[in-house]
Length: 384
Image 1 (cartoon, rainbow, N blue to C red):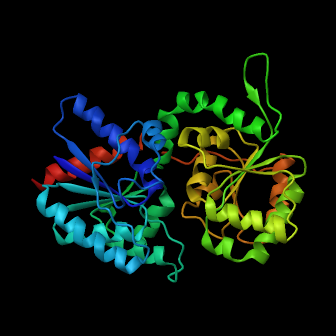
Image 2: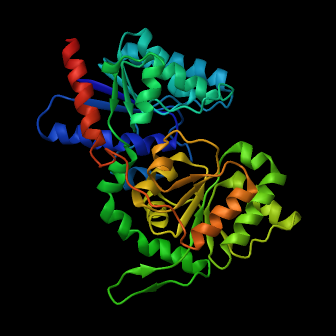
Image 3: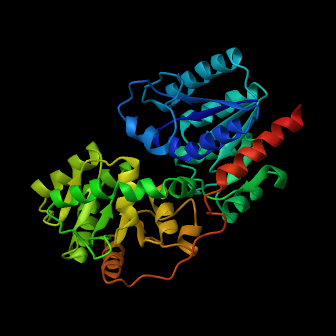
């Protein structure tokens, strides 16, 4: 049995890593199952740092489609052409796709045109805003998929309401949690590197009598183009956040565009960055340690909010919706949209340790990949 696993961006590797590890476990048991990891971009893509693969315990992709264009329509066409060529040359029993990128949609279309079983991890996520390109991608990918793997019951309900047969939709849980479970020791071992970074920022760190580290800090990440583009509102949001944080330092592992925008607000618009520390983006294990041990997290990333719920760390999401409502209804997540006053108040509550009681959603247990691989292999075998 040959499974193609497609990744359209760096975060996808984090979600497919548990599946790859499970397939390798089955291979060690003598099972007849192989896989090919395929990446949309080039082999020298700078976002694919070596540590992401070593941290997750997987190898780099063996197939690179070498597509780097930015125009989504052009990208979709190129992916369809190159992935079709791959499937015509390589026998494939099933294709696994993740999330909602344009390249993922393109691969899904080609897979179904070739009559190959298509499985979608992180299915049933919706913003209910059809103006968002990713919302269109989600509708197409879910509509074409033979198997829809969801992280929660709410995602099941969405898929079922849109016409997906009950037999196609499986609530397997959140696959991100598999990595946290699998990498527990490595994450804790990354603490020394993280605390070196904190010391470099001038943040006091210490160890107690049992050797446990300690420091009070917030973590901030931002990536959404809409948030970064509206500089007046972003200035108001960041000003309120810094004010409410008070003496609690804010650690911001952010990338180039966000660094440029926030630095500019500090230099030219009077944003007070005295307790705001921009650091380089961290490797997976170090970032996992940083967020796990934070006093709280402010982010626009759904993945970060999901991991915060599992780690039971207070989290503020800079968005008006979340694809995984369990993080709000059960977890530590609070949505503030793009409202500066809501953000300011939420940060104040966070640093005052005034946060809601939370629990971990069902099936966020670290065994998602086991369920995913079994369901796919059973489906392939039933087709033969």
